[in-house]
Image 1 (cartoon, rainbow, N blue to C red):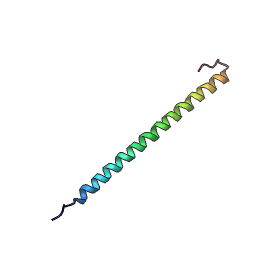
Image 2: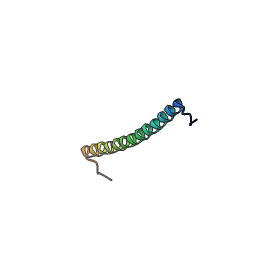
Image 3: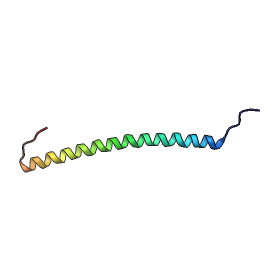
Image 4: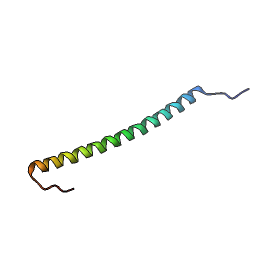
Length: 58
């Protein structure tokens, strides 16, 4: 007889692989979002200092 394929095991393996792929994509998206927020916060601070007449320092 040939090899017995456990379909439940195949489904679990596929689900695990998909979950890892999704988690990786979410981490990448979160990193971009965090960087974008950091940049926006820096720009807001610079704008506030400009409006206050403070000297800008980079």
